[in-house]
Amino acid sequence: MNKEEMYRSIPKVDMLLQSQKVRTACALYGRTGVLQAVREETDSLRVFIRETEEEEAVRSAIASLPERIADRAEAMFAPHLRRVINGTGTILHTNLGRAPLGRQTAEKAARTLGGYCNLEYDLESGGRGRRSSCIEELLQHLTGAEAAVVVNNNAAAVLLILDTLARGGETVISRGELVEIGGSFRMPDVCEKSGTHLAEVGTTNKTHLRDYEAAVNENTKAILKVHTSNYAVVGFTESVSVEQLRPLADRTGLPLIADLGSGALIDLSQYGLRGEPTVQALIRQGADLVCFSADKLLGGPQAGLIIGRRQYVDRIRENPLMRALRIGKFTAAALEDVLREYQSAERALRTVPVLKMITAGAEAEAQRAGRLAQLLKKTCPAAEIEVRPCESQIGGGSFPLERLKSRAVVLHPHNLKAEELEQKMRRLRVPVIARLREDAVWLDVRTIEDDDFELLAQMLGEVLA
Ligand SMILES: *Cc1c(COP(=O)(O)O)cnc(C)c1O
Image (cartoon, rainbow, N blue to C red; front, side, top):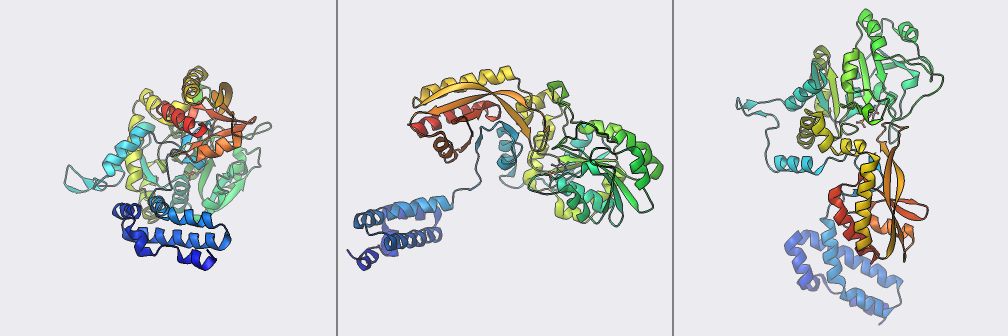
């Protein structure tokens, strides 16, 4: 066959549409989508013919065309966003969706959202209700704050607060608290987008109360404290707490705002994790407004939570930006469910995945790693399996200095390089994200749910076979 003959031997579209595999694809995905798959596959076949001289390869590519069309149609309708198994040991992994929601929360939300829901409908009165009113009540109850309001994320919360209270004036902030968060976003830039000017006081390592006092003038609209969540300034340092700033706020009548970042509702110092004040503590210390993320230490979906004095929260609620920054029903369903769990701390510690992972002791993880290793030894004869000590991180810009003692199941494949295994694991039907260390694949069990052990063992067995 010469090239011309090869091109002519590509079946016509009508012929392809009659093959059994393509007909099945049409029934599943509809004709229009399958036609696109037909075009894309025949185009790539033409490219292949142009670049090859091997007649046999072309013949077999033509023979498998219907199958590849069906596969491509299937891929067109398969979600790109998928569940993965996190074997990295980083609990709040920004690239893996930050806080994992937990299957129960996800299932409850899915049941609520399958059809209509009472998002803005009051079932008692039969009239209009307010979106997130029950979430706000839960937040008030859990934190002791007078009022609460919910937006899309914490950056939006900071923007909305300053736009409402400090636009056109100055906001006093310590130079030690000018935080860059993930993705190269800088909180000072977000703040200034609200139209407030940041009046920076103090130095990187030391800021005194007198620095704040000296900066307040007739243009000052607010005092902002930002929790240094993702870094620590240590050594010769001094900062001014919310409690110490309260008298200045009282004297001047300025709102005292705290961007807490992670926002823990449960005191984690009892689990050896220090330096992260709870949201309730900041309210008690006298912050007028506290804002924090719902998908960091709280363990919920992406949202920004604002709590504090009713007079300020009411003004924030009436800001037209509120309409642009409000949460959707997916977030509302998941957030309500997670906050309900917090009504009992002991229950939340059992059911909220982030809390469960943070508070699990090294002993418990050693036992779990032993169990996973046992399973893997059965399904993966083509690898040496061992349990090794390792350290998990909290991640998500929380507890930057803390490490949790944990255990990893370590795989040394016999017939593959460790890098090849790691790559293949990312392409499994439920992708597994692992770390490469010392020429082996490491799976920290802290971030892997018990429910996934069997599946993991089965999939790894297939990959290594
Ligand atoms: C993470 C963080 C933010 C941003 O929160 P998002 O929910 O990601 O928008 C803002 N401020 C601080 C101090 C943070 O740690």
